[in-house]
Amino acid sequence: MPKFQTRHKVKHSAEAMFKLVADVERYPEFVPLCKSLHIRGRKETPQGAILVADMVVAYKMISESFTSKVTLLPDQNQIVAEYLDGPFKHMENRWTFEPIEGEPGACHVVFYIDYEFRSRMLSGLMGTMFDKAFKKFSSAFEQRADLIYGTAA
Image 1 (cartoon, one colour):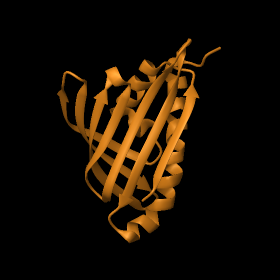
Image 2 (cartoon, helix red, strand yellow):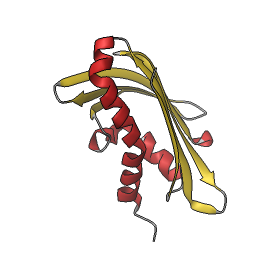
Image 3 (cartoon, one colour):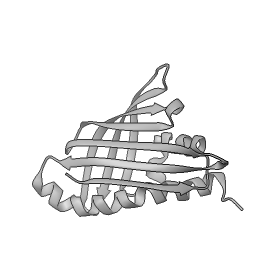
Image 4 (cartoon, helix red, strand yellow):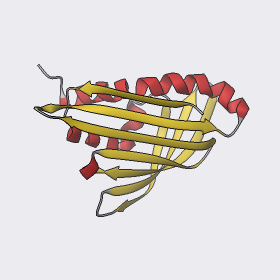
């Protein structure tokens, strides 16, 4: 069961990074392997919002679609994606944005993912490529933040 976690400092506030990662409709513009993303539904709750989203990931001739429930928790600076349907046996993805005391324009971004494909064949075909892509996720979001919010002087 592949797991990956990274934590690093970015030059953008926790609120700005939360907003950027919560904008899931934009993922096909910059997220590695994300070919398309469609929001099936959105429900507002007192804690935040819950989205059900279909994402298509593609690499060369291989394309797979999966559905996730994405819970946006702005008061906790956290986004949790739970696997609902597709080629995985399970998948859990969590983003946490930790404000840095004394640095209002910066935060630590924690990205965690734990997943396993249903099929050994698919795991063999896409596993290494997924591992590489997940390692690039945080930097893709940081680069997107720099583009959207600008870079600190």
